[in-house]
Length: 248
Image 1 (cartoon, rainbow, N blue to C red):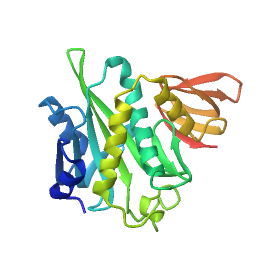
Image 2 (cartoon, one colour; image 1 turned 180 degrees about the horizontal axis):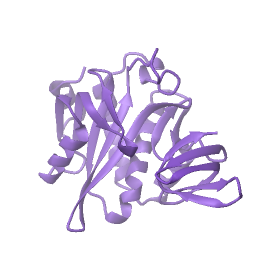
Image 3 (cartoon, rainbow, N blue to C red; image 1 turned 90 degrees about the vertical axis):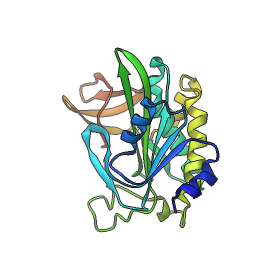
């Protein structure tokens, strides 16, 4: 069970804020960042009622069912493309350390188990007069959400479907260590290579919905800063920066 006392035990000296209920941990973390939160500070909650995802989606995590956190960074501007990668790799390695197989990354940074989503990641940056003030890296991991009988029964999964009785406070501490390690070397080739190795769609048919339309073809490669390269039905290479991807 998450509590201030339990988090003090597992996170030790790391600055953190714990909320029983919040609209969005990213919003709380952003305010804290602007107030001077140290790098590596974490906001976490037992219930999140207005979590944000990509493309403006919102989602609700009932009390006690997920691990929701936002991690504070102050990266260099040139390292911004790698923040989401660092989050994805940190989650990937944390879940693999639980002994799970079939863990992979769905471009750009969803984490899956056997093709079903277990984690979403959303970095959000804040600027002032063209100067980057910092980034909060939002992460939501399904721990014990029951998707049976819902529209997500075949597309989402929770960790406890594979590993029972997880301690969310301990899981958060292990993830925080991986986040520290990878965000300290955002521009390292090792991070990009680890992220690319985790992707599950390279070489496979894909369909990507973007703000301008849908691109279908074969996912051939990813660029250093994260863009996906797709060869469409006409043999033309398309560079995709952001979008919703589905395997063909």
